[in-house]
Amino acid sequence: MAYSDFVKFLNQLSPQDRKKKRSLLSRPIQQVDFDRIKNVSDLVDAYQDSSIQARNLGACADIYVRMLEDKERPTIMLGLAGPLIAAGLRKVIRDMIHHNMVDVIVSTGAVMYQDFYQAQGAEHYRGSSHADDVQLRDLLINRIYDTYVDEEKFADFDTLVGRFAGTLEPRSYSTREFLYKLSETIDDPGSILVTARKKGVPIFCPAIADSSLGIGLTEHYFQSRKNGKQPITIDTIRDNYEITQLVVKSPRTAAFYVAGGVPKNYINDSIVMAYVFGRSTGGHKYAIQMTTDVPHWGGLSGSTLAEAQSWGKVNSKANFCQVFVEPSVSLPLIAGHAMQKKAAKNRADLTLKWEGEQLKEFKIIKKNTKQPPAKKAAKKKPR
Image (tube, rainbow, N blue to C red):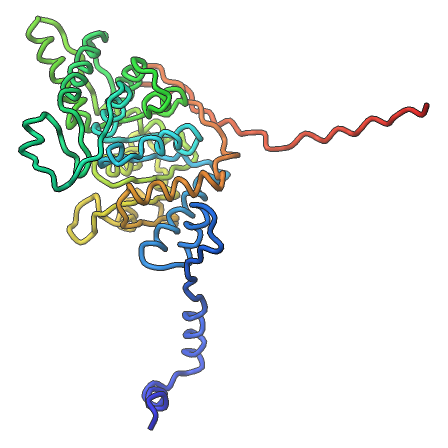
């Protein structure tokens, strides 16, 4: 008996099973074809019919485009964690803000500090992950995997942050308000902090103490106490209050997680905190995440977005996807895909106005996409 006949003998499929089989085998994997690929957007589109993490990346990119084109205009909340600026992603993030592709940022202190560091004219340098770290220490060079930074400049800028804090009125500040004021001390068009200020995109940094910004603020606190002065305080519970106002005033929300950590959980918790205002938002309408963390250790950074549905943080009918690819690779592809498709071209603008901790205005301003009628050519008078 031929093997093919043997298989058919052992597995006699019913007509219903045959129909189901045909359905499951109806969509072939498409081979990535560079004869048809002209740019980043084409490549990411091709990934959508590919497999493994390429398909997940393509799915995340597709969901991001849908976020940007959704007529309900969900408020897009961008979570930033990891060595993103050291990896060369500063301009990618800055351009996302500039092109109206993100509305709220929740970041680690390190990302914002490294933006501030570069705004002072300092750089991140190509290094080696196999460096002699004892020698680097002797030379006052700090290593971030295969990237180097100058510890002497870090020390200078930590102190600069502390001195800036000393110029502020000694009262309580949310991280949003503090970072806004810090951004006014720099004028770098390539800065995330500066671009966010100019575009009205609030930046929250709930774990600000765990960074060089926190070191600078600690120096301010020490010097203030030493000299008998009142230091400023950073009130992260006020952060909760402020970001939840954004959530409850938004028609819908969407989450874009670059890595995980505190920003991911904070954006998710902002949905839960809506109950304080007597609201249930139903959870994020869209959510995407790029990470190298995995679910089976039980940590938040690698937890699935489906798990977040059990908490009500992601809507039960949400479009969501995770790609397990490190952000220095995945973020430029996903953001570049949306930029090249001009997905945010007709996206309404969002205007926010704060008075202290109160969000006094949340206004969506739709763009006029209708083209004015073409003028008719004037008829020439006969001579």
